[in-house]
Image 1 (cartoon, each protein chain N blue to C red):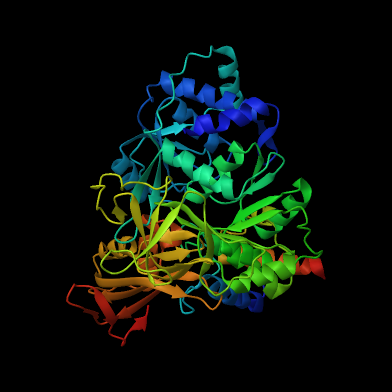
Image 2 (image 1 turned 90 degrees about the vertical axis):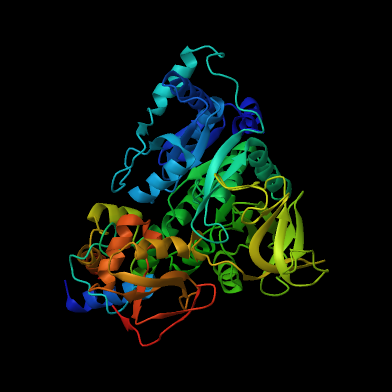
Length: 486
Length: 87
């Protein structure tokens, strides 16, 4: 089901109900579809039907308007993180063959962008344009087999990939979620998770709008979130473990009133029980933990009323999702055996953009290998470890290979190993071990990375060593420890 | 700006963001963009860390008005003004 069709029911039944609220601006469901229709008309007029268009904006009302408009003209939305730097943006736009990029007017990108920027017309103009035109100006939306969105993923290995999701898979990602954790029409959903991330897109934005709820778009900061929960009666709070930790660590003059929250859920990375306990103690809410990947869509979710049996428990499978535990030969293991978690889901992608598809990377027919080691029994699914090299920065995934390639492109770097370093608070951070072949310090290398990579990928610590030991497969096994901090 | 506040801000920066303790930080070292290149996650961690360290409250509005994320010096000045308000 296309994103536009997903929303159509809510818009028909609740035309005057607020759909999106952001910094004093409100768009009801009728206005949202109207603005999307107006933008679709504009896209068609400038020849942007049936092509790929990047959306590179922080969370704002214009993101769903652009997304729905692209859907209406049969175009595919490439969802890009606005914090990506110029070289990264160019790479992804070239990979996806994006014709233009839709950016916020306050975008602070650095470096050349390559792909032309399409300014988003003011919402009032879009609504007026839709009201003045007939209903048949815009072409019929894409079919369920058409690619609706392209999402970035760190993948299970190597540099980041682009994951295509058809309209059918996007609809399934929304449907699977709503059948298990339904938003209600009278819900006020806090939208702090980024819309360019699969959970933020399918399970916050599109699921919330499909259910007819009101979404409150707000950049995350503990004090603003607490104020908004109290002022707007926020009832659904999807966030990352990092955000929940920050809420629990902030000292508030008056105890936060979270009594309106009926559904708090965590996604993006695993939720430590220490955070769960602190949030329960301080805010009086339980948190459902959702587990999934960009490639598979939602996989499982915990019931916040149930005490986790042991660490690593990620709950019961979402409706329509099947999981197998595979042994090292790729064959299914027995019940309660440990192995790699493989997922079959109607929301699952079938290959990476520009790659082979079948048998490519984690894709095995209808099944997708998650790169996580786990176990499945009658109590649910357990994630016991990762077989992939991925660094998780508060829900944002960093591919070590991408950071290594960036550092290796510096003329004074001979060899490098990028890995995760865990802080005492449990946060992953990017850590680089570098072999120099010229005169260069840590700050210079950090600045070099910051010019080429989004800030969350820049190594927080750089250690210099004389050599890195490499195994038979040319993989770094261990650094020579006679290193120095730069 | 008192030296002790500046030093304590640096300590919070190192602790909250995982930066190397021996990275040279001056008053004019930028926090975001170039310089320390703090991402949005690190900025939230820094603010919560500063609130705890100095027993103050920092809102998004405070940061915007004072252009406080421009450098180590500007965030230190905001911390000092918030501490003065409390007295």
